[in-house]
Every structure is written in structure tokens, then in C-alpha cells.
Amino acid sequence: MASDIGTGTTITASGSNATWAALVEVLNIDFSDLWQREAINFSHMETTGAHVFKPTDLYDPGSITVSVQFDPAAVIVPAAAAENWTVTFPGGETFICSGFITSYGKGIPMEEKMTQTFTIKLTGAISGTVIA
Image (tube, rainbow, N blue to C red; front, side, top):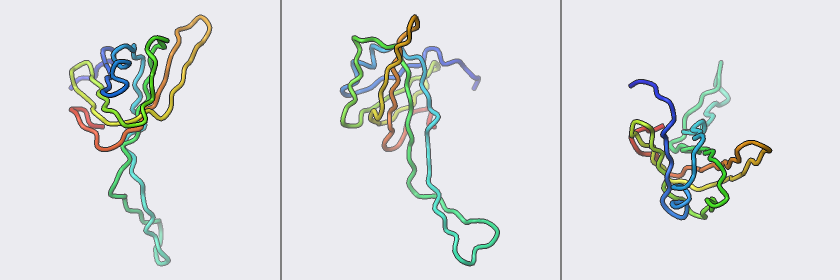
């Protein structure tokens, strides 16, 4: 598989944000906070040299942050329940997750484009053809 550029990537939602997601112009999707697993310290009084750790069985699927051009007519409504989100890459590959919006903000600079940024906290398993 060859590397590609992000132009053409889309994000869609099903639920209360479905109409909004179809209207926004996406600038960036940041996947830098995926797949976190806690480490439990199993060291004891007779451990020598270095701590001994074991991974937890459950992992935190993480979150993704999305930046879009701000359009006052396309208001983001942070739903109280998780929604299904699909990121589709230029080659047709998909990243499918369930999540809810945990933070939301706007950037309105002088003589520059206005932006919105929101973070989706993922819940449950991730699926699709591109899995973290």
C-alpha cells in the first residue's frame, strides 16, 4: 500500500449529528489518542532490578479530534448519547466507531477562516478496514 494524502477524507455521523456531519468542511482529523491500555504494577517486596507490569484486559479505545471550517448554519449539537461515526479515507477504507462529543470549541480569528474543533470520546470496539 502506498502512502497517500488526506484530501478527500470524510467523517459522517448517524444520530443527532447526522445532518451536521454532511454539511461541514473537514480540515483535520487527529487520531493521536487511540488504543490506550493501563499497566498494573505487580511488583512485590521480593522483586529486584525493575518493576513487573501486566496489561489490563480492557483497553480504552481513545478519542479523535476533528477540526472543521466554522459555519454558523451547521451547528454541532453534542448529543448526550453515543453516536456512530465513520471516517472514510481517499481509497475507500473506513474507520468506524461509536462515540460522544466531550469537548467543542470555535476559533474566530481576524481576517482568517473561522474553525470549530470537537473531540469524540470513543466507546466500545473499533471496526472498519482501517483499525487503529
